[in-house]
Length: 66
Image (tube, rainbow, N blue to C red; front, side, top):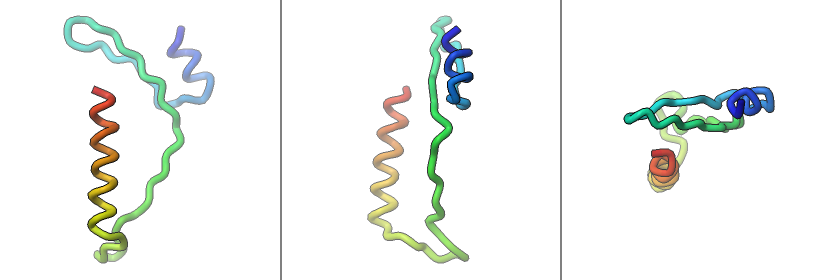
């Protein structure tokens, strides 16, 4: 039921996963995202410091999801 409500509410990336030991998990995820290029024609367009910052943020979000 919750999955159907999430999907019909516009959270198109939502899903249900069955983990080890039969644990059922549901994720409600928005479809909003922002993707931007870091390079253009082989040239790095941002500083390496900024890339390290992004990696830190992304790794933190990955850890929250596990």
